Length: 250
Image (cartoon, rainbow, N blue to C red; front, side):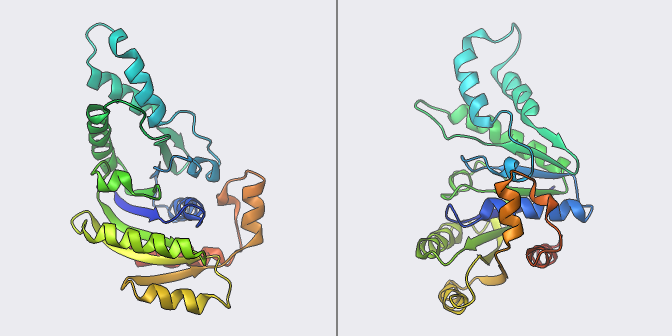
């Protein structure tokens, strides 16, 4: 079974970037192939890895609803969905990417979601590691539509709203002890003068604060140019990624 890392936090905290750096870090340690799961509707994880998503699970879900009455003779709905899901996996050097895409529209998706969950459960054992870039609300975890999490990283900036989001994530995952084994706090891009205050506030949550990721203009430039974060070298960010991976067994 894959060891899974989930990256969570309010939008704008840099969680997708950190998820991409973790994928690259695991790949660099020879821990691949890594399954990179973009569970955020913004679908930015693939872009940060240099692999724009070609089609998402959201796209497939809508396609299946439209084509339900036009299935090939002898093909069940489950077989059609499974075939489509396999085609969604983008295979790259050292990692594979699958993107969730947009949320559900009107109508009932319960059966399709159950097929997607089964596919995720069946797919996970094929990989030693899985990195999941979560949506802010953790809906797919709270609805039990994703695999269990070995380590959840809660990303916080100096934005007061991100502190509130971290509190809500903590409260949500308090009730998911059987699904989320370990939780860690990561501060990201917090200025040195504000860091002690942020860390003091976070200490109230009773969750281990693992490390602080500094801002690096070189990473900002890579993202601005649309390049993969894997091109980042000689950066103060990389030791922090190593610290995270060592702590959670990577």
